[in-house]
Image (cartoon, rainbow, N blue to C red; front, side, top):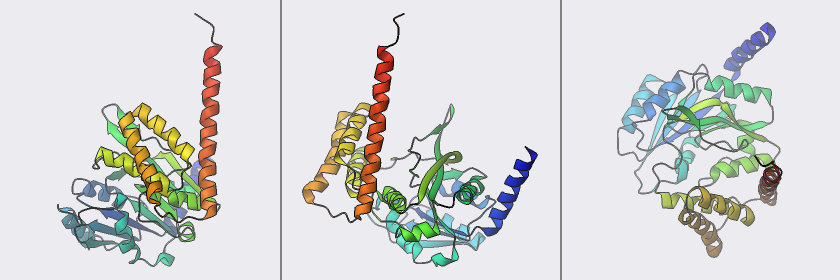
Length: 313
């Protein structure tokens, strides 16, 4: 037991010395969130070598808060973009502006975080320890949790999917997959690209980040599900998988919402919207989805047999 503790301490100390990472954070009207997120980043034992905050046309005090942060900490830089009527999903339209300011060869990792989070005090130490343990880990992130009267509630997500709000890329992987796209579905595209090249993508629910604005908040609900349907198209989802997901959406939310989801998917087919991806990307994407459907199907079969063989009380 004592030896394991000492080994962990050595690993943490060694990691602190060697990790060089850049942090990119797109923001827009985040005055209620940015200060707490900034405090949680600055208080980490492993701080970014460079932190670029890209203001995407805020109309509140967000730029003032970011400027003050940049004055107080030399590794923080603010980029202000002009106000736009519509912002691309996830602020990804702002990401290229930040990347142009970075020489990626100077960093081992690249983080892309939202500003409506609060990282646990040991978040960076733990996430970099995972990269140290697994050399083929290309994209990783912690778990998103929502605060409730009963405590923290985990936002469910597949193990191999890292939420767009807290992506951490190994630089070698980031460059190999060609970076991030600037459209909806980007946070799935990067992972499939990575896995198709032999990288591992993994989320770690034990590494906690509080999500102060739950997923989808701030976007009209009708738009959310149409956008998700479009994202399925752009990421080459198998139609059978999309229809199965639509059925689940109707069950959990409502048939109206599921119709909107299917409309977003089918309308892209009708418009023959362009979606450039390699054959290997498409193969991996659809193979993974079919495997998920098979697992779900067999699980339901087992549950049905179990229910049928239960003795009457």
